[in-house]
Image (spheres, rainbow, N blue to C red):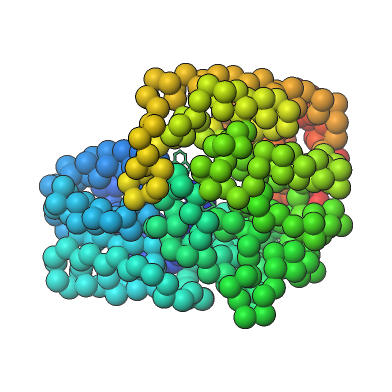
Amino acid sequence: MHYIIHTFGCQMNVADAEVLAGHLETMGYSETTTEELADVILLITCCVREHAESKVYGKIGELYDLKQKRPEIILGVGGCMPQQADVASKLQQRFPYLDLVFGTHNLASFPDLLDQVRNSGSTVVEVLHGVGGITENMPRVRRDNLKAWVTIMYGCTNFCTYCIVPYVRGKEQSREMSAILTEICDLAERGYREVTLLGQNVNSYGTDLVAHPDFADLLQNIEQISGIERVRFMTSHPKDFSRKLIAVLASSKKICEHLHLPVQSGSNRILQAMNRGYSREHYIALVDEIRRSIPNTVLTTDIIVGFPGETAEDFEDTLNLVREIRFDAAFTFAYSPRSGTVAATWAEQLSKEEKKERLKRLNDSVNEIALERNKPLVDQIVEVLVEGPSKTDETMLTGRTRGNKLVHFPSDPSVIGKILAVKITRAQTWSLFALPVGMPR
Ligand code: 5AD
Ligand code: SF4
């Protein structure tokens, strides 16, 4: 018996898909990449923007032919889309050939749901809402044997006015610190060298736990785990980024010098309308302090253009913030109204053309600065964790610097999984080229 999981959206979904793969393999399924061979196909969906949803609808449509040919195949849709009001029933109406529709709070009961489908032969729909507590120790098939995703908290309670996440992932719930540390010790024993801690807002980790540990405490404990050499985390929220955390980052040997710190807009008016909880000035002061305490920090961000009511002046404020901060990279998005969120109900929506034009102008600036930030790296020697063959040129290998920059270099596969010193020879906007200079370790 074989399965395929198609994962859309963010790393939270990637982590959830690893758990679903764990359940499926415990039930006797093994993975395939050939749809014709699959007995179960799952789509783990994203609804953060319309574009993400369209891709999912397209994929479900594509699977119709396969289901006609092999009606016994089980097609399931999980993740964030079915958590939205009415979407689970709409999916069923529009695609009656789906066998299973489940949500983000149903991971623990997935084996039971799949059994119900197999035994009844009819469509099973289960989407739980609200908080049901965290289930620890679910089986998990990790997609990588070097770098691991470790979820430290679920959900989000910030309610940024554009964002659907709090509605589909529920309120913030932190995992017990002991459970996280046990998981990371186990990963270290199994040879993992890097962990990325995941949460929608890792800076508020622990506020819901009885002992109130904070994110800085968690990082200090992870620092002690031998075998783990690189620690990353995302996503940080500028409103909750503490001085204590900056001090811990500055003194750590393992926490990598890369921060993903979404700013979303450079206009105070828009930041307020977004309910972000900080001002442009606060963001700039925070970045100044981070850069003073942790030199060479690679800073990346998320920016939305065309939020309802965004004037030409507001947009200019975003552009001049980008020029002032000089991000290493930015993920940029045209605002996409999400049904159920506050901002989607506002009258002052911008046209698609206006959003597209602003996005292009923003991307031009972001890309120009990204290249400028990479150029001074030429001739520098940096350490990369070697991941494997390059996707663009199979004669090359790729790895990531501590700052999370992608580096291509010639070497033989024996260095995969090792940390290697390389000298940067050429800089592009999104990647660097290098030559190995040291012995791998
Ligand atoms: N429209 C456009 N971008 C959005 N994001 C979240 N919601 C929306 C939306 N409705 C972006 C934010 C967030 C990133 C993950 O997705 O920038 O940080
Ligand atoms: Fe969405 Fe804001 Fe929560 Fe991030 S912090 S997941 S943007 S509501």
